[in-house]
Amino acid sequence: MRRRELGESSHKDDLAHRIKNDIKASPDLGLLRCVQCGMCASTCPASRHSNYDSRVVIKRVLDNDETILDDEDIWNCFYCYNCQSICPVGNSVCEVNQILRQMAIDKKEGKEKIESFISFADSYIDRGLGVIPQEYRGQLSIDYGKHWDNLQEHLDEIRDELKLESMYLYPEAEDEIDQTLKAIGFKKRVDEVKKVRKQKQLGDE
Ligand code: SF4
Ligand code: SF4
Image (cartoon, rainbow, N blue to C red; front, side, top):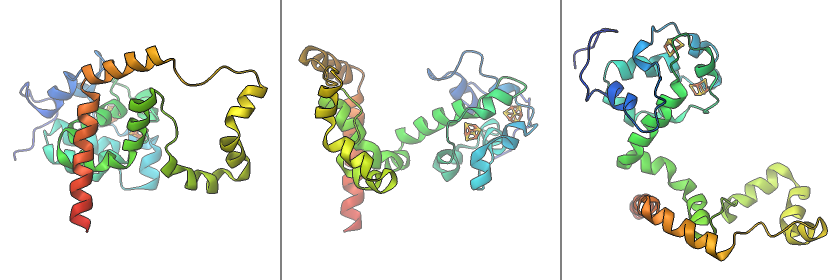
């Protein structure tokens, strides 16, 4: 693939233009104005802990390098927005990464990256709430200790004591969320991710 020089006119179907036109992109996202100054990389915590380089991510996008969608790099960003706050041309590597991840999720590889979080989606579908799934509780118990265990075990009593109302939704609200999740294709997408997880598990056996 021929490398595009920065600033050279590009096609509307290029990766950079698809990102600019994505529904998640801010209307004034300065992606095409990137001058490769590297200020974003200088403030990026992910680059301190890995080979990740936010400047390079943007360079590859502007070079229309679609292989970035299969790259580990886009999964190293913390979404801290430091890059956005320092960029002199109003670009946001954070926002670009979010859109790149979504594009990757639309492919099989990205679905594999998020399958371990699917329990959060299940709890949202079941109760309309993003509660902590059971499978993460063991590790959280190690991280937070006995106090956290005690809170989880006696949450309802503690809430009663504090005279707090139920944290769960009314059935009408649950129905409304259920219909909304169906209408926006959320449930279908969760099923697609589960299918990929199943294939992976069968492949591992
Ligand atoms: S700070 Fe902005 S202009 Fe500079 S390299 Fe990063 S994205 Fe590009
Ligand atoms: S949002 Fe991502 S790319 Fe931007 S500074 Fe934070 S970790 Fe780095």
